[in-house]
Image 1: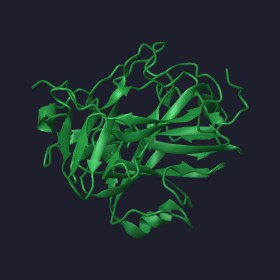
Image 2: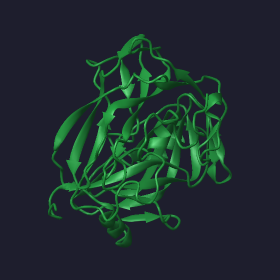
Image 3: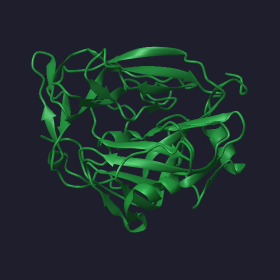
Image 4: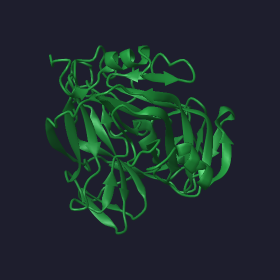
Length: 339
């Protein structure tokens, strides 16, 4: 067991203690399942704005910058369609008052990345996206940019999650992640001009209306520029119960594409102890300016492992999960693929 005063990612019981102590508050009561084994789901509040450009509020408040770039306001309490190709800023229900020594980092939830919705956290006077500086006291906002599908969101929709950390955790190890192109269907490509994805509707969309299957040839797959793909890792992914991992964007030296918007893996993912042995990592892949031939087993991402300050009271998937024991799998919004 790791010492609780060592630098590391905070487990669920420590996050719940921060909530109890008022370091994390919310405009509404917290949901019973909002705290994950090593992260906190964040929820949209009642308002969002279509903005003409993304920004970083390096020297001021997010609210003041929104007033400068907003095109129109949306009422999320009634639900609103966020159009693909547009950028929005939304209020989040949660507010932070982090104690000294505690900072945070946000990332999209798995289901968000798998429908190609690009999201980033904003804080007042923040000079980077997704990172929350030590001791931050203020509101938090979410930039939302649907890329392939237009989506329906509402107050309470969870699009990203927050990982809190004490000090500066060490990187325990970095592992390469290869892609599996051996199956009859190696992946899926998002269909342009599809319908709207309701982000709170599970198993409610026919995947054939939104995706087309990708058939590899000779263990290779041609990625077209600007298209979005769902693929699976070559090997199983296993996150030890006292560690967490983040899948980092790959550098251009490996290929002209970006992999994995949703970067967090909670402790217990893919472990025998949490009944998830053999789980694969699902990869969200977007090719850049040039066509690119991807080969079976080719490295497409890196997993960075960091320690927790203590073993979490619960592990990934113990309360039910759409993605434990997964192989190649679309997001929870879609029914199982049936040719």
